[in-house]
Amino acid sequence: MLHYSYFIYSSALAALLAIVIFLRRDLFKDAIPSFVFGAVLGPVVEILYGSDYWHPPSIWHVDGVRIEDVLFGIAILGLALVLYPFIFRKILSPIASGRERHLKTFGTLAAIALCLVIFTKVLQINSVYATAITFTAIWLLICSRRKDLLLPGFTSGLLFVCLAFIIYGVFLNIFISEKDLQAIWLIHNSRLGITILGKVPVSELVWFFGVGCLLSIFELFVNNRTYIDKKLPKSK
Image (cartoon, rainbow, N blue to C red; front, side, top):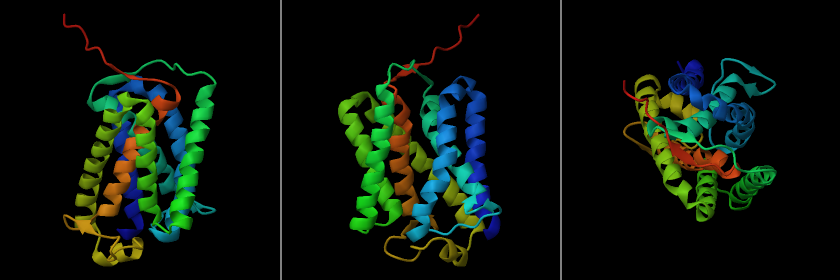
């Protein structure tokens, strides 16, 4: 089971994304950039986490790029964009940003990269916690300019935490042994590797919250978009 664990985990998230998109096909076009970014960023950020956080197994990889990282990246970025509007029946307004959206995009990505370098290399903070701190801080900074994105971002962060609770609570407690966790998580049984409800890592909950907060509102911020209530079909 350990050999297939990361693939099953990533596939479960990807399957959830597929279900949401199937039920809300109108969100597919808006989510396409997230799929592309996720497929690229998934393998890239795993280089960071592999240094001090975990060494997940893989069923197939090419030159160090694991298929699981690609699936996970697509699933996380996709779900971050569509989960909130799916649950609360929202749509995204038309893109209202011009060329400045490119400046916002690369400026935000540069800020994320700089913060991660400072936190991990200078302050020696574990990469998964550094990511959570960075993403939460930049989300709050964006919300200081776009207060309408505060509640959606916070709610998305909580939704991601609930999702992590369910996945880890079931999968790790039933299918993964303590020995397997020790082999995968480099911080397991350390002061940074606290678990709750059995084997649910607090580090994952913190990571999911920060990622959910920022990635859920990133596209709305850079393209100057807002959430709009989705009109219900008129009854005959």
